[in-house]
Amino acid sequence: MAAALIFFMATNTVGGYDVASSGLGQNGWGAGYGGEFLMISAFIFEVVATAVFLVVILGVTAEGGENAFAGLVIGLTLVMIHLVGITITGTSVNPARSIGPALFAGPQALSQLWLFIVAPLLGGALGGFLHKARVTAP
Image (cartoon, rainbow, N blue to C red):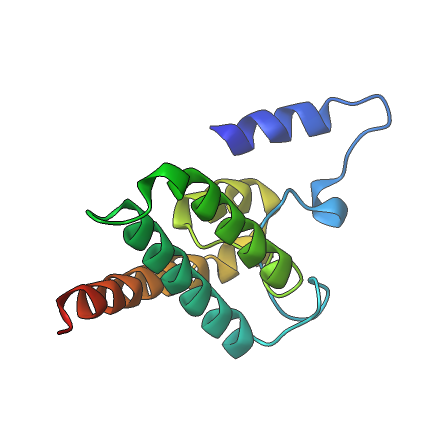
């Protein structure tokens, strides 16, 4: 829904807006996108960044965690992830953040969408495993 609203606003400007040339905040990799990283780099970044993000979220919100600063810690972690990843993939770490823009951005974004669904799911599973392993360690 948010991507549809942004698409509507962007295409209804006085000077016009070409989604094909300017994009719509879609994620991607390869020639012509960001730092032109290869698919393997994009995949590794998305898995690791999602895992780190989830470990932080679970760590600060768990019983005995520093709940008073949870929002600040989570927010600053997401800022760090974006600062590192914006030129690699546009930073997804959330399939819902990638699906909407890809629907409006065209065939290349749609063809690369699988990575931004699979990698965050794997990263989430890895992050959950790492958190559980840390919590249950003696």
